Length: 435
Image 1 (tube, rainbow, N blue to C red):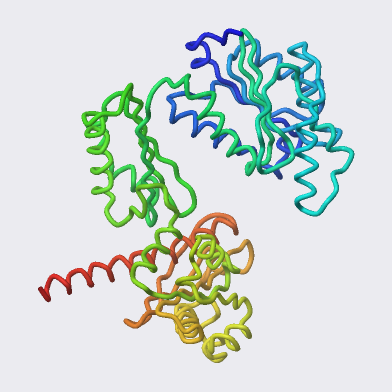
Image 2: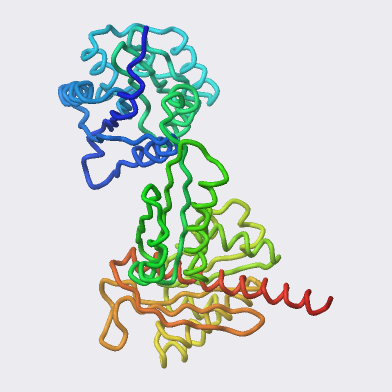
């Protein structure tokens, strides 16, 4: 069977997410972001994107519209064992093909349950039906197999909705099926900064815009505590000349932004900090009040963090600050729990209790209540204790409760990053001086 015209596929790619829950405020649709990123690496882009309920008629309608305007269509979700999983039925109806039973799929599902010491439920039998003529896409992380369907005019990929299943299957699809439709190679870079707002970053990198070739795209993306600069250059081939152009722009941005840049390869701030601590052989502890453990959660999200992170104490109440960190109750009464002095005492206490080379402490008012004219919502003190002493920074963050907590942990991690960076410079200078 002949495939759709190559140029039509390049210019007409569509994504459909199936799931009534994705139309609520509780479940954001994120699979399309992963898919778009992978397609961009081939110089391809999604032209249409939609989210559709679980109702059969709605799915049928969405697939019909997609077939009328697109050549390559990705559909995620609705391949499970429950009654509201109707993607197979809907697509089969639109392409006018029957569903056929596949014993090999049923055996895989049974074996998967048996490996966990469980018995397959009767409802899972539904997942062993496929659209006639479709190729089965193996799903190593779930019971729902994907389907790849080729017609004379269209290519359809039916994939499970959960990201741990969707993502690896997309990567394999791109490698085995979609790669032949590559339009361009793409040079990409994500420069991540913290400690400055979007307007400051924009003002600093203005000289770069004069150097940008028309095809090199520069965009900025702001989020609480971070601004990203994304560079994208589509090229027909990767060679020294276009790499030179790309790297010239990238290096100039990094130089202009200086210490505000914490990553040029996409790493998170906690990953960068973890790498620095490991390289220096230093250990860390933290004490948190208003962030409620978010700082420790970010630190320990990095694989290997047990090599440098010793302890995290969530001392939310005043009594806990006194009992576990040794913060004098008199100090809290005189200065208040949200104060420079208490942050300093918390940092010292965490470093001593762990014991650790470094300790971070956060105390503040995340809101929406609890603020005053003297100590407003968003006031956060962050302390960093080391053998050199204790440095406390006063901050005023804007936003809702969650945003304030995120910004506080971002600032704490950045203080640690800069401390580690200066430590490395000092060690390097000492080595040079001793030679």
